[in-house]
Length: 400
Ligand SMILES: O=C(O)CCC(=O)C(=O)O
Image (cartoon, rainbow, N blue to C red):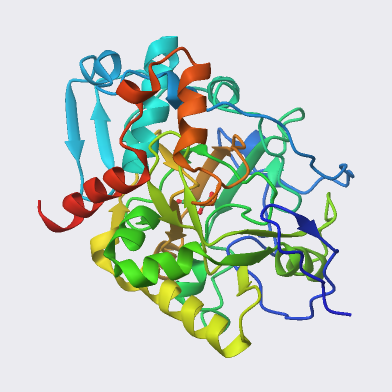
């Protein structure tokens, strides 16, 4: 029986019985991993523990970016260089040590990540335990139901990205477009201020592409924007779980499907972002299938093909990248596995954020209430509201 969708946003719906065999090749099956080689990070190599976790339930979160000074002076003035990589997305900060950030700087980092979607720090000594602690200050940490966790016990909140060339990607099974995803958007409260640290880097290849949902929204005509704002989409964990089972690894939490708004409003910036991704968004609910397919295909192609919305980051060992999973869609380029089979190893900490807010839900009064509850004068402090702020992104994309 096909899953029955409910129309309310963020509502988990019946467990799917999907039979679509395609799944994100990036996540499974697990590579054949050699734990005996002479390598400093054997303890962080991928494992798939046989444990069972309860379904996730809803909780309140307050984004620390809401407390930040809009000018972000404490953070930006401490950096030796602030480099905006593209007009729409991506900033590189130099001269900062993530282990030394003050609470004020952490608030400002949350705001900067919310505004720029991707923020890059090079050469960071931060350990995975410190990375988790920092991440926890942004929200409760997500434990992934299917992807690898490090071999070292007690690190089940870490998502391991690992390849060593022993399992070349099957390019007959998927395209680069299908690699674009936002993390675990099938969850009721998908992640926000996410961080990934690369602990082993190939000398060339393994770049990551991020595409901005703000920029995509801003590029559309007002009519199409309004149409998208009225829609909700189904996000599914089914294929990822099926992929894991097919690969013989244990699914640690039952897969779910959740409906979210197609346009979400970031609670800190007030900006609107298109919130669909090829990895997990399966259909727009309540419209004819042909219409859903056409709209999603258009949006997915814009995400994957429109270079104006994207930043491509070349990694080096010990680089940390923060991204706001609410407003970006990411794809790893796999050419380092195909052409230069070298080790690439990274550790992710993934704080969960609010249940995605639709344009209707974030009506200005609600925004003002949030500001008031934080002790701000809502008329003076609100950062633009949704309309004005998206003009800013538009300006960034088109006028710079
Ligand atoms: O390894 C990367 O660069 C990207 C990883 C990724 O897409 C993820 O953690 O969701």
